[in-house]
Length: 98
Image 1 (cartoon, rainbow, N blue to C red):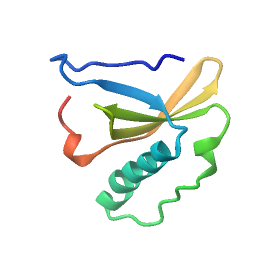
Image 2 (cartoon, one colour):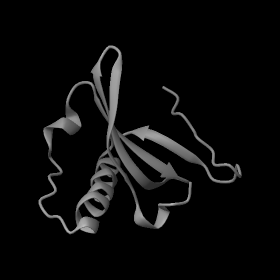
Image 3 (tube, rainbow, N blue to C red):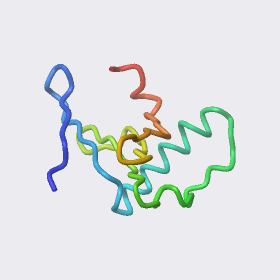
Image 4 (cartoon, one colour):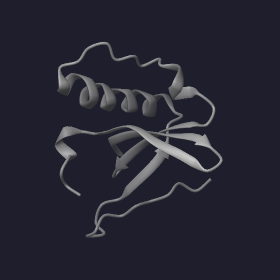
């Protein structure tokens, strides 16, 4: 399967969104979510083994910039006509850049 690529406005940086499957991507996915959604908000108790991340119809995604993980999200299929994007997190140093 070809992975979609999303170039930035200047066309210089290589952006890619991949479905999380490899161990290194799982680690990056959880590191980003833990740092942005929990630690940056002063929260504790992040669960990297939450069953929804591997549930059928739920797709964990990783945003890579020039092969470096910078964002994480999960696309949850709700039914045949609806989906929900959840747990969107972008590394702090990459936020606010469009």
